[in-house]
Length: 370
Picture (cartoon, rainbow, N blue to C red):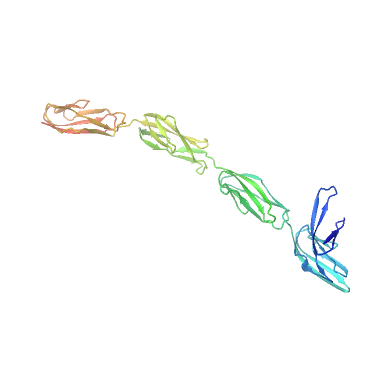
């Protein structure tokens, strides 16, 4: 197809494609050049035999027209294509016109071929191989394509995990949630790849407060505490709850406090990373009487009769169930502090039992004495 001498001069031998190799004398570095030998028929040049798209650093060898007295080739732009003997060396990128003039006998003919020379991509790298970005923040990665004059610089951007970070077709990376993922830039020409590690920093909690900083609860009552964070969009909203004295008040995993016994304790809410905390002071109050009722006793009584009245105090867990007993008319009936009633004269009287714990709960019974 083509021959080359030790001076690098290429001679087209036959139609087809050949590769010319050059190797340093020490056996080290090598280089290669693809040569396309275009076809010529007798006495004329076929311009269509030279592809209109060529690549930088490639060469085309053109056979001499048979029986030609003379043959010359010219390039419209020496920065794109260089003529050396019967070889065309493409050294730059762009459009160039090659003209070939040949003389056979007394007839001279000139043909031309418009050629577009492109530069293939040989690799790609990124301006950063590792970046750190906060959640919802952005950072731009830039792809550096080699060589710099490559014709097709189209890049496809992809992320290994869009739940951690996304990337646009311009290399703009946005942090989505805390973690690590990989952004890959891939060239359309040659499918070369370059990867950057992206570390997304989560939004940490900086402050916490509770809906109450102190509260008083009756024994047995509950209170729901709620924690809010600064900033509100922190990635860490899990709260752990603890009571300083579970014999006074307990707290569950949802922040619900239950008063157990009289006294004071502290409920503490701690953030997931134990960075911030908030407290609420709980004072458990005695459980007051909620009701006072009498047992079944007749309302008609006789002079001289004595009865023991029974009072039922609720709830069963009330701390102070003591009662104060009174008679509305001591001349008709008297009552002692144990509820013992003595009917001493005819008339009407009301016996009342009132809780002593300040709840103001009471029960009363009207009697007619004959």
